[in-house]
Image 1: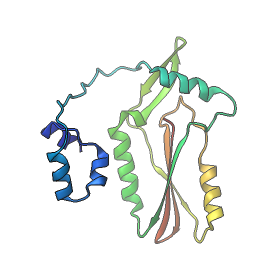
Image 2: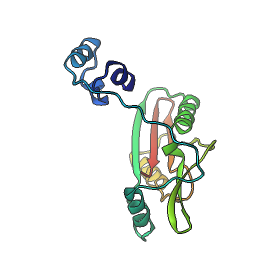
Image 3: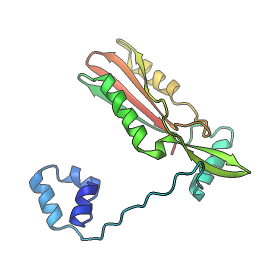
Length: 178
């Protein structure tokens, strides 16, 4: 999607892929798309700590209040019918973590100032649980127990779980802190 936008210098949002799922539909969308100049985001120099936005500071403060521990967790659950290559799923998960610094970021106070720190080479994996013939209530309880508060000083601020219900049914859970 970003390559289409960049090379054709048009606005081509991700939702257009889903709204126009055929090549012909995408071609029509592109023909009628608004032109725009593509601007690349320049890489910044690697540093130990980076400043935070006011939104990050606000979330950090709110997270410190008792009772707000999971208020900002963003869990995602997917029920998968069919086979799932768990090793490949875990490999894709690691690739995503390696590629996106935001997924490897934690927050720390440096001289009383909230800073973000990007971690390199984090060991991340999906937790895999076996739950043969688990009822929906049991699955929901496993998911609820998985969703825990994040320690914002410890990266990653995202975790994954694969529940194998059978050889052809899985529940994928991703829990992250914005």
